[in-house]
Image 1 (cartoon, rainbow, N blue to C red):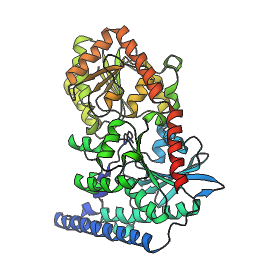
Image 2: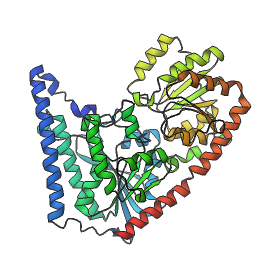
Image 3: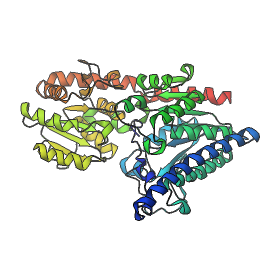
Image 4: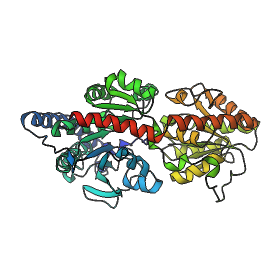
Length: 476
């Protein structure tokens, strides 16, 4: 999304243009300044116009239901249709119907081209739709598509998104959408707020990160769009209190939301469980084994699943592998996922002389990951969201840095071990403990699965969401 607990989009492309790069330096500078100015002015004018129109005219004649059934529009920035189908993330979309509460779910991904895995080369139009499953329509829009603004990428982005926004307003009214749903208070939060004003439709937010903490550690998710974090803070403080409901994946995220303006009486914890693919709920001993040849199988290995990016601190795992190798010569660390630091990690592994102890598998489908997880000796988590839950379902002892929400699932001596933030030596020590004290590791793994099955129960979480959504829908 992570984002999320899901993948965060890379908006660097918003500030780039292949046409602009052909101009001399001084012209590029002038265009860049003009682009920033035009984007700022456009954003102000557009926002004022849309909100003014919502006050002056009755734009919210939403019929609310179709045949007595509710419909939902969910706005995401984590996965394109291609990513969902390639890597088996359908559960992320299908679970949004809240146990059948919504007769139809429309999922909007309006930034095709922002994520490094987006395949937008063959799509030259504006908007296209796909059927993910019965009752689930996926709407995909190119991030920027206005040709005469090709040399002004930021302005192109703003005006392209306005076009999509107006299309979504028509969809909400024509299709009887009764509820809007965003995944953070910034981009999708603004989308939801403006659509809410234009259609008199309530919106909810599903929060999967603590952006204040990420910024404190040097990461800003939407930096290419909002430029400065104080701008994001202003937006968050504006959007949060206007949401009909804020659902946080854990207590840490809930505290972040409330600290940034979310109303406590309209904020709840709704854990990651309903976002997890059903393959991870299968008893570990009953999952099919990986039958392909992998060089680390037959050796004790620690596993990490997530992005290879700065925010995840996965580079620390290379040092963990180097250190663990000194105590347990056959130990290996396996990383599933990809990211902008992949090539850098490859080089670092060569420089450290640990290419025989670190393995990069790239992105994999959920079913495949669920099969490999129980074969690992431990799960290594510098910074994890949903993947930490999946590891617990696999019955693995959890080793994690003590930061953000990790302590809510990793209970020292019960489900795993917490080590100080960025202390990779301590993580390596804990990893070696799991490799040499197998009964201890096994007990931690059993406890981790038991705890995950209780806290992350999909039916309970969906029932909680369903009841909260019904309260909102009944009020409007």
